[in-house]
Image (cartoon, rainbow, N blue to C red):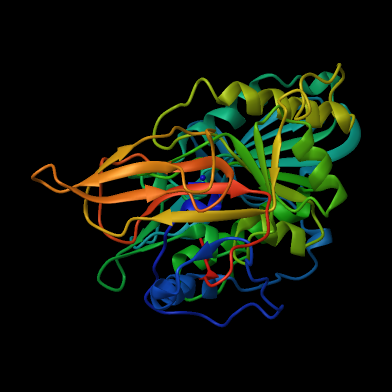
Length: 409
């Protein structure tokens, strides 16, 4: 997917910062064979980017303009939406972390400030740079808002990981220690004085833009390059507002899971702000068949909380949503060419053959079966694979599989 969804994504970092002080939540419901524990431990180092930094009293943060203009839009280094004129839309740039040249990465911000007070809802996208449908979903939603008819504020932050988006890749490129890619969605809530640009960008954006202006949040993602995802939500249904928001979308699947520390939606939750992650289809292109589902659901959220007038449309009930408590990956055991036998959203049974793998001679080197009765929520989009790559993610409602280590993606 966030979490491509969040749990579909891989990251590796070369050194770490102090861990966040709270006790990490361990993802117990998604499993991986024990042979990959060591590799996952290395991947998990990127969670060390998640630090807490507090620049004084966030409740009293004020809007600070830098005095710069970019393409006719004012630049802010901090924002309090209460300072903005009601009844109109405001287009701004937020000044983020510095580049290696000493210039800044700027983040695009749209604020639809209602004419009357009400809930403050924030929509984020672009935490991963190859997730285009998430950006287009937010753009479409913001285009439908008329601030003169609104109660409350909707803020959209569209391109948080700017350098990753510039190169259409999932992770933030860092050339300071040779070359490495940092997964920004393992860095929240960040640290404004952290040891990496990713950590600082997360800290600046979270402390000076997102947290002070948000009552409810939705962090949009898609599948990642090489791994497509179905339309679904990821979030903790034990949080009432999270459950309410997720069920207002006509999505076919929900993974009821809190995921793990370091992702943006959990940074919100740790700050007392209900949030979840919609997964809007595949990466790199606009998934125009899937985007309307999430536009409709987001408008339903606004209507439910009284931000915009109107009748609520289709919901998860209308979509006959499949709610899963667990997810399991199917990993490739060989290298070679993949032939998929099932599609996204297909229901599979234990032991059902789901893929065949061949070598360069066309000889079958592996056949893959489903370990559970469940729903295909993610599958490999590349036609080849090395050993150990994710071939499928399968959502299921049964008990967790035994004899396997937790899978941290």
